[in-house]
Image (cartoon, rainbow, N blue to C red; front, side, top):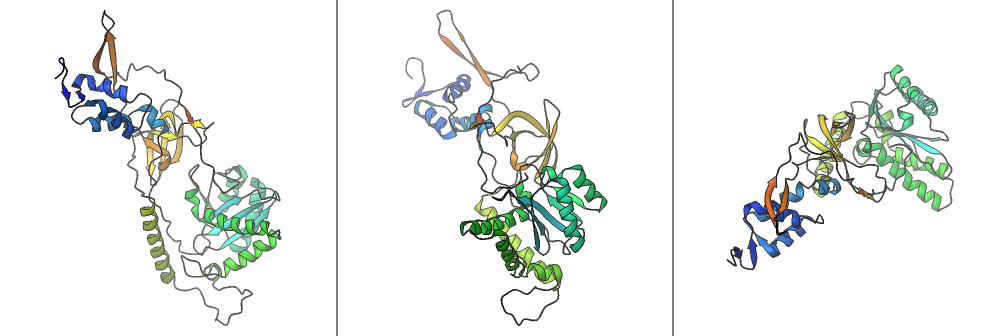
Length: 388
């Protein structure tokens, strides 16, 4: 003890009533958990000090707004359909240097894909091109697609409704939900980049790539796309004496598909350290700032939302101020901890500051005035697509 002050070695032992103020002082400048603990350890001590510092950082409103998003969610594998061309995915790729776009359609069962070159990609042009394809292959039951304007236009939706096609739109800003066609786009882009670098006719090279793709066994099913879609593998330039096989019993490649998907899911989940989110109905969350205005934009917006419904990795949330509802992937939401208790101080007649314990603000009378948040930038995706 030094002059009525309890010490522990060369550190002050902070009384319980002064600890909230000490935490506030140590968190000025918004250091992270490790730095805040280091600052406290150099000068002060009290039981469970590290734990209280960790909780203080976790509940700091400013730190929550700019904190990193949650850990990636476990991979959500799609079950293989029962037949070819009943469940397909579509997307646009482009614009290409020529100003044209590629309409890509992939069958989830066989991995067979159609690629169409288009100069215009409005709703009417999209409907006309799809109708040409569906005349040859039939109408699918379900189309998985993103929220590009041509896919949410009245003419496109009316066409699908008339022909009994159910539209499965992916969550906004979450292209992973339409992952099959996104991966096909990356493969197409690679071939087009090679063609452009070698100054070749990219449309001819595109046809050569598609023929190669149609006649190559897929890594997941073990069969060629045309074999599963048409019941035969089409001829290519490579000579072959193999008999044309009819479509195999589904159990063979279905088991192989499920096994490879499960192995891939487990491997990727381990690599990304994925864990499921504990967000549920009724939770108050922040929404990730997906369209930041500048480099200093915060990771999460300041508005608070209430989770109304959760289905798998998708959630419907309601803005607590405006009442507007949004649909987002759980990865874009962050559960809010209880706000940090504040402290106050007064000065004596001699001007000496006297620290007091925490003062918990009544939520009914809490001021609505708040400083504007900082802003954070976002990372640019290497792939360029027409729709988001």
